[in-house]
Structures are given as structure tokens and as C-alpha cells.
Amino acid sequence: KKTGYTALDQGFVNTASTRSAITYIDGDKGILRYRGYPIEELAQQSTYLETAWLLIYGELPTASQLEEFDEKIRRHTLLHEDLKQFFSALPHTAHPMSMLSSAVSALSTYYEDSLNVHDPEQVEISTIRLLAKLPVIAAYAHKKSLGQAFLYPDNSLSFVDNFLRLNFGTLAEPYEVNPVLSKALDRLLILHEDHEQNASTSTVRLVGSTEANIFASVSAGINALYGPLHGGANEAVLKMLSQIRDSGEGVAKFVERVKKKEEGVRLMGFGHRVYKSYDPRAKLVKESADEVLEALGVQDPLLDLARELEQIALADDYFIQRKLYPNVDFYTGVIYKAMGFPARMFTVLFAIGRLPGWIAHWREMNDDPATKIGRPQQLYVGPPERHISR
Ligand code: CMC
Image 1 (cartoon, rainbow, N blue to C red):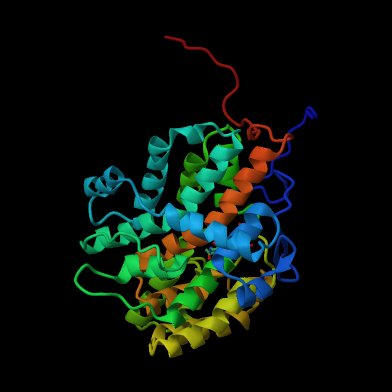
Image 2: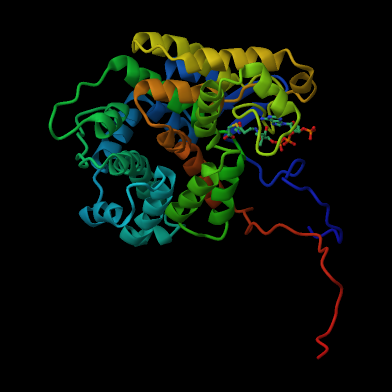
């Protein structure tokens, strides 16, 4: 209701934009639950697709519901051949996140029925298409940057195995999926699936509130995720760790520069708008890091550097007073790197992880009769009325 007065809340620190039944976070206690289920339980016992179902439909699926969902997704992995040509128009140096958002936006041109946002059948098929095709688009963005041929999906493989083969397989040699890698990636994707009203999800909802279709809304979400303060932080962390290593300046000196707030220097992968204690996702990622690197037989001094950085920061008053802890992006990059992904693919992996959350929020927004077009207020601080005098 119009109150006649506009409160300024820069960055939406205190303003709820919606009611939502999807994800619960208690930032002081470090609690994250999807539809009531603790993230720790899901990471241990669920899979990416099962958790996606949970987020989108509200309950854990029965075995046959999950099987049918998985089957449908496998059936929709192919990209239109013309859409594959779309990648030829882009430079091989393009950032995969830009390729991803552009190709997802282009999906609207192939599936124009999705414009009918109030037709449940269209919403359902668009959901399946997005879940099935985003990983394929992501892998093609990767292949494009390597200058390698795109593979067709192999639908006999599981969701994650198919994705790994599309990224690391070649036409020249058969690709054997390493089950350790596959399990670890599935687990990381679960941890990223939703995070209530973060910047990209809020973007998806805002765009969707205009009754724009789900492909357009998710494409906007991917662009919001790209920024280094959001999903782009995982790539930025690796860059930061590599710079510390290469410059030889040492972790303690780098932390001093962060505290002095030198221009452009932040401890990437640290701090969060909502968590004022250890990010529960970061805790799980950190536990995985050792395990995965060991299982893959990779030794990476950047992991030691990350641990040292965390230890120094957590003992420092600057970080203690501001309640800055590692967030989900702090350790993921080291694991993705060990899996063989280049740094520029890290945020793409985040996007695949976050997709079920974006879909769940778009659908919740779209189904809610209380939804209104998102249209924030402003406080005008420009000149008062004036007139042209010539
Ligand atoms: N390094 C150094 N100082 C920091 C950091 C950091 N990473 N994060 C916050 N601060 C300081 C900030 O300078 C400010 O200090 P002061 O009170 O003296 O001005 C105080 O802590 C509060 O920071 P803020 O910028 O007001 O906090 P915010 O809630 O607006 O920002 C954030 C949250 C995540 C954007 C920020 O912590 C940040 O830039 N972190 C680094 C980027 C990053 O890791 N992003 C990933 C977030 S988690 C996954 C995701 O959402 O994608």
C-alpha cells in the first residue's frame, strides 16, 4: 500500500521483496535449508536432480517421480543444430558466462510458446528444457574456448557424467568418467542450488514479474551472477591466490593491503550479506577439498595458500569485528581446477548449480496471485524544476 513516504534502503539490506517457501537461511547461526531440509543432509544423501525436484516441486520425489524427471531431462539434452552455429559467431576468447547468457536468451527464439507464461504445460516443458540444455550450452562454451569440436550428449549417462564427458571428452578418444569426480561435482552443485533472494535470483524474479518468459529471466540471472561480488567470486578467488603466489608478497602482507582498503583489493571469497558466521556451504566445500584433491591425485599449493589466508583472516580483528568468514566461493575454485576446469568456467558451474533455484523462484513468483511487477522507488536528488534560457 502507498504510504506517502519512501524509505531509502540501498542494496535492499532491510527490505523483503517477497514471501517465499523455498529456502530458509539463519545467517547468524549458519543455517541453510531447502524446503526445510538441512543442506548438510542433502549434500550427503541426495543428488543434484533430486534436490532440483525438491526445490521446484516442494517435496522430495518418489523413486518413480525421480526416474521420470531424469528420463525427461535426458530426452531434451540436444540443442537445435542452428543454435550450435550460434557459437561460431562468437570469438573463442569470449568469456563462457557471456556465451551462456546469450545462448539461454536465444532459447526463447526456438521455443516461442514459452512466452505463454500462464500455461502450466509450457512452464513445465521450459523447466525441463532449461535443466537439460544449460549443461550442454555450458560445455559447448568450454569447447569453443578450447577450439575443440562439440560432442553430442550421450543420454545413456547420468546428468553429471554426461556433462563431464561433454567438457572433457573428444571425438578422438573415448572418455571414461571418474566416479570420484562425478560424485564430488554433483555434491558441489547441490550446495549451489538455491540461496533465497540473492542478487541473481532477485533479478530472475524481477524480470519474471514483468511476465517475461523463463528463458529471458534466467538469462538475466546468469548476467547478474557473472559479477565478481556474486558468482564471479569463485574465479576471482583463484586469480587472487595465483597473484599472491606469483608476486611472492606473502599472505600476511596481502591481508594488510585488504585491511587498508587499497583500491580494488578485497579478500575474495570472504564475507556475505546474510551470513555473519561461517557459511555452512563453505564448511562442506572445505571438507571436500582435501578429499577430492587426494582422490584425484592432485597436489595444489594454492589450497595451502587458501588455508593460510583463512587462518590469518579469522584471527584478525578487522575480519572478526566485521564478521567476515569464508563463503561458498572460497574453496570451490581449487576443487574445480583439480577437476580440470579452467578458471573461466567456474562461474558457469555455479550457474548450473543455481539453475533449479532460479526456476523454483520464477515458478513461485509466477504462481503467486499476489505478485506485482517489481518497481522500486527512488529518492530524487537531482536539480529542482528549471527552464531552458537561451
Ligand atoms: N574483504 C575485505 N573487506 C570486506 C569484505 C572482503 N571480502 N567483505 C566485506 N568487507 C568489509 C567492507 O569493506 C565493510 O567494511 P567497513 O564497515 O569498514 O566499511 C564491511 O566489511 C561490510 O561490507 P559490505 O560491503 O557493506 O558488505 P555487503 O553485505 O554489502 O557485501 C559481499 C557482501 C559478499 C558483496 C562482500 O562481503 C564482498 O565483496 N565479498 C567479496 C566477494 C565475494 O566473495 N562474493 C561472494 C559472495 S557469496 C556467494 C555469492 O553470493 O555469489
